[in-house]
Image 1: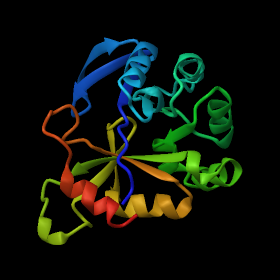
Image 2 (image 1 turned 90 degrees about the vertical axis):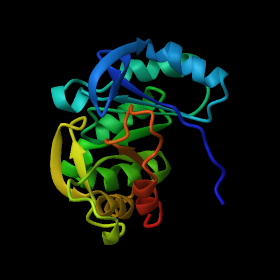
Image 3 (image 1 turned 30 degrees about the vertical axis):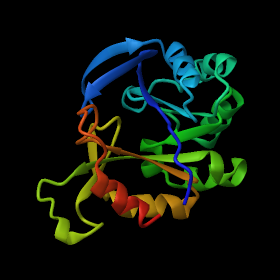
Image 4 (image 1 turned 135 degrees about the vertical axis):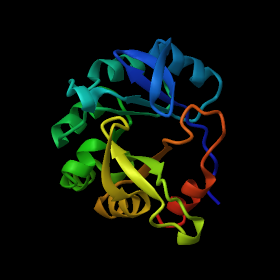
Length: 203
């Protein structure tokens, strides 16, 4: 059995940590570097920083955040948001990130997963999957057909089955899947165990 890791995931908007419910009603929750250092002091195993509007607003990647975090945080960390090319991945890793998370670009141009994994190693390529339950959710379907994938920070459904896309991302070279239940995000209701099981049993 794999050891359990505690990995806080911090959403970033305009350089600040934000918290919302189901990707909406965002409120400021502090400086990302300070928050990262705090979680390190609380013995987190890793950290994830996701710029949740970078893809939507087509902003530059968060290179400066990677540099700032790497100066003061000494546990592994992943950064995602706005990464579209292998060069984006290279620059992010060069800036201090241990791993990069790709979401929207992975669906638009899946070859970026393979090319990045071949160049830098699959261990540092994370594909983020934002999944939402279908309105006609039916547990009798099993793992497939109950969750759909969204991109652009949860703004656009793309018509992909979440479990099928996670399997495909692994086949393309992703070393990890960063799975988010949009239904449970910020709800304080815990993990979507059915979604987690559906993906973990197939990748």
